[in-house]
Each structure stands twice: as structure tokens, then as C-alpha cells.
Amino acid sequence: MSRIGKLPIAIPSGVEVKVGTEAVEVKGPKGVLVTPTHTELNYAVEDGHVVITRATETRTARAQHGLRRTLLANCIQGVTKGFSKTLEVIGVGYKVAVKGNLVELAVGFSHPVIMEMPEGVEAKVEGQKLTISGTSKEVVGEIAARIRRVRKPEPYKGKGIKYDNEQIRRKAGKSGGK
Image 1 (cartoon, rainbow, N blue to C red):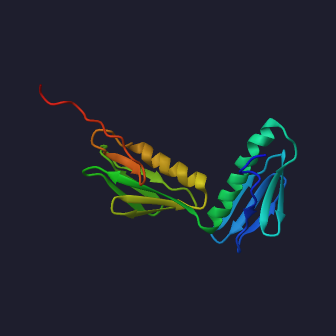
Image 2: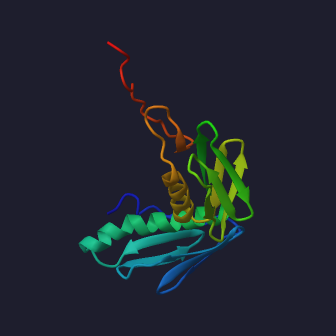
Image 3: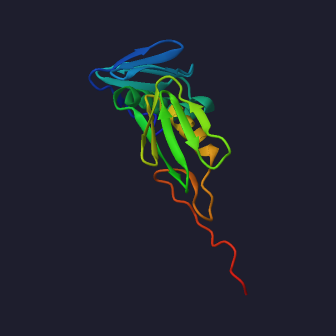
């Protein structure tokens, strides 16, 4: 039995979970999220908890059990608290600005890089820190990764876009004259 999959998911107040044949819909104060179900798993809403059990003991059912439970738990957390990722822009002359649903990055190219935020994702700037927040953990992480990919931090001076909690392994560079 999956250690993660067998844990019941608590449904907080103000959250409604509807189990369908194709997907599970989670409604909460921050919005609605839908996650697909798996045919070899059974979903049940019992007295304030969602319980996922295996219909069969096949290899795919065992593999999907913990995954689907975690995806559903992320949906419930997303519609109640939400998710956020913070990125730091480090470098002389590097700037970040938010204009509506567009993020404008000036990170050493001859032109600014403009990225559009999808619906349900919000960006805020405080100094050199950019915070991406939204209800879907997957979408927030993907957008943050795309922004980081524009200018990854380099190991010599540490310039670039990095996650707030990321440690950059620094290199010594060239040794001076011998």
C-alpha cells in the first residue's frame, strides 16, 4: 500500500469536492481546479475527507495511487491558500517590471524580454524580487521555470534569475598571472 496514497485528504470548510468519472472538481474561495481521475482508483468523499483506494493491485494502480492523491491534495491547497514562487533578479542593470499581466525583464539582452502571465497567475515585484502566485502549483512552477530560463544564474559572478531559496555554486574563475 502506498504510504502517501492511503492518507485521507482533509477538506477544509468552504471547499467543495465533486468526484466524477473523468475528473475531480475542487471549488474553493480562490477558484475552481480540476484534476483527472484514474480508472484503476476509487475516489470517495467521506465525512470531511477524500479517500483514494485502489480498485486493482496492478503496477500502474500502485504507481498512480500516491500521485493522484498528491495532485488532489495540491488542488485543495490551491483553492484555499494558493501557491507562490519567488525569483530574484541579480545583476548590474538587470530590472524586472510588471505591467498588467505582462512581466518585462531587462536582463542584459539588446531588447527587453516580455512574458505574458496566463489566466489565474499573478505577478508582483518588490525591488529585485518577482513573486509568481496562483491556485495551480503546476502552472505557478512552470511559469517560474520559464522566467528563470530566460537568464539562468551563472557560476562566476552569480548574475541571472534565480529562485529565492536557491544556492548558486560559485566557481573561482581564471587564476591571475603566474
